[in-house]
Structure formats: structure tokens, C-alpha cells
Length: 276
Image 1 (cartoon, rainbow, N blue to C red):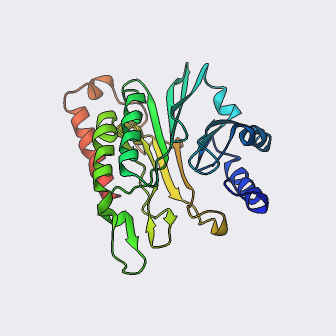
Image 2: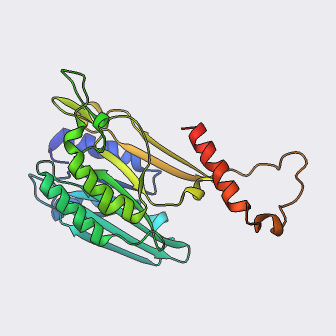
Image 3: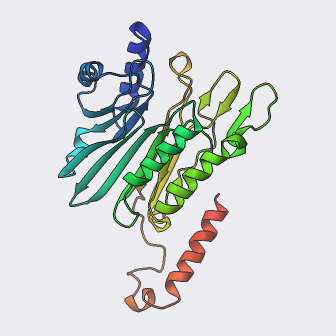
């Protein structure tokens, strides 16, 4: 939203078309002000927009959440963890607790990015109490192959390893977070393609037994942005009829047997490896 006129209108239209069926979505580098934010709310009548501003020249982010989705929670609280860099939406209700963390880390300074990660660490809740989703433009890559130079075709992501390690130690390991994997680069700069835009979550591996999780980098928006949107979905697996010969639920004594849990875990890990 940094540009005025036709380009800004096209960006708003693009976001509106992509977000109409989403429970929530984030925008980064909005270069927004409270006045602009208030005017844009009318463009999204089915969503509530939460903002954190920097200035017209730098930073800024927004989190849009559908009205229908918000109605599932009794407690809704928007917290600016770091102005224009990190926003946290706390959602609490009878169906559970959810924290949405939207980030846009500094694009110039590794020291500033580490500082933001420290602030994020202080704002995050334990994995045992809250389902957390962390997403946005991190402005660094995790792995060497996540950035490659256009002129040489060689990976150049290793220079971000100090910040990547900081994220791993302070956030991913401590709070049980993992990346919702998709393999494509999300940002085209003048000299390189980079995987800057990512999504992390902290649900337990066993949640994937009866749910489908998908993550995808969408098509490049051509002249609208150097970044491509990244989307994810977490859906319950559709119920199917039991296999032939299975007419009732397993007896409790089978599930309570000491070998049941480790055997299920072993088989599940084998399936994950097989389909990786």
C-alpha cells in the first residue's frame, strides 16, 4: 500500500479477491497511517483489520480476520509487540485458545531482526496452553538453498545463518514451532530469489493424523509486488467408511496397552518419511 493511485487500488482489489474466503490473513510493509487504515476498513466489510504502523516510508503491518471467525471467541485482544514489526492477536473461547503473530522484520539490520525475535519470544505463550501461528516477511532465510543469486545460480542463504539460529533457539525450539513447508522462493529482488515469507505453527505431530495440512506459494502478482502470497489450510479429514472387517471401535484394552502409543508413533513417522 506504499503507492498511491491506480497501483494502490489494484493492490487492494487483489487482497480483497484473495481474502474473501479466508479466516485470517496478513499484510506486511504497508507504509500505513491510522487515517489510511480507517479508510481501508470499508474495503473489507467481512473482515476486521488490526494494524501496527511505522510511517509512510517504512514498515507497517495489518492482520485481517473474518467477522465469522472472530465470533467463535469471547476474548479478542490486539497487542503491538513491536510497532510496525510484530503484532499479536489473542483469541480465547470455549473452543480453545489461538494466538496469531504477524511479523515484518527489518530489511536492513540483522541486529534489529534479532531484537525483534527477542521481543517475540517474550510475547509468545507456551505450546501446552495456546495454538500459535506465526507468519509474515522475516527478511532473512533459514537455509543456504533458500536464496540463490540470479547471476551465478549459486545458493547464498548461508549469510543469514546467525539470525536463523537465533530464531531457531529463541522461538522454534522453545515453543515447539515448525515451518509449514513449501519449497518455492517468495521474493524476487534485483540480484536474488529468496524464501523470505514463511508460516510456522506449534500443533503436535499427532494432530496431522486426522487433519490435512497444506501450504503453498501462490502465483507471482506481477507488477503489484516483489513478493508472492503464501497460504495454508488445516482441515479435518473427511470421514470414510470403515475397512472391510472392521464393524466397531477398537476396545479400550487395546488402546491402553503399553505398546499401543509407541507403535502408532512409529508407524506414523514411517508414513511421514514415506510421503516426504
